[in-house]
Amino acid sequence: MKKIMLLFAMFCFMMSSAQYDNIAAGESLTYRIHYGILTAGSATLSTSNAMLNGKPYFYVKGVGKTSGAVRAFFKVDDVYESYINLYGQPYFYVRNVAEGSYRQHLQSTFNHANNTIYLVDKKNTDREPKTINTVKGVQDMLSSFYYLRNLDDNQLKIGNVIKMNIWIDDELFPFQLRISGTERVSTKFGTINCLRIIPSVMSGRVFKEKEGVTLWVSNDKNRIPIAIKAELKVGSLKASIDKISGTKYPVNFTK
Image (tube, rainbow, N blue to C red; front, side, top):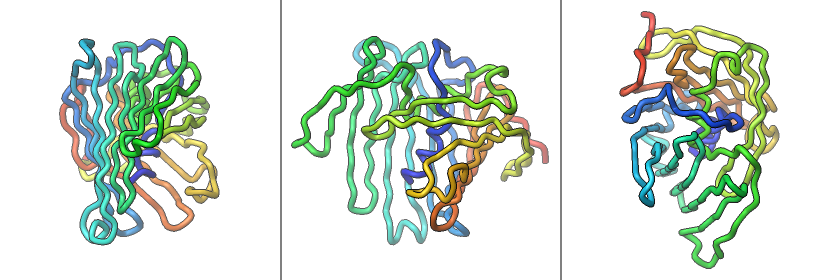
């Protein structure tokens, strides 16, 4: 499940001051996750308006869990949360996961004025909170997912390569994305025109190849991630859109 959330996070782009004009509070997207021929689980991303410390934020919650036969031998219940300010910058990010016997509960508070992150480990209380230096424009795993959807058409031209920095768990990772073309993608709702995006990832540890991941995003104002496919060292992993509600603009599938 962590791998599929990481794939969603690869939609991250470098920061500028942009409102979330293409996304409505109350939107919900659910993805069915497949490992080979097995249905391995689901991931849901939902949005709302929220207050934190007396200030308004765009709140995003991501929930991932295994299901069926996979859950019988490997239980996953992951929750990710992000409070994003009015300029599209992450302020408070939570990763609270239970994967088999593994547990982790990290809270990250972003200070964009001095490019630092204050990290607290809520599970391991012996670990002292610490302040970590980061870079300008950093995004967390969830905020990056929504920032992409508000880029303009010039930034998403075919052939463009966009570099980024993303905060994953307790470490900063650089990524880059290449807009490789357009493609019609089949879904349970019908087919839809998509941008095809190839992120460069670290090969050898998890992924089979450096460019072994492909992302498809609806080529419309919503820019909904429609599908993700990754060739792993062992097998393949795919997420496909399963439920859609509350989008700001109509989603036009062709039967």
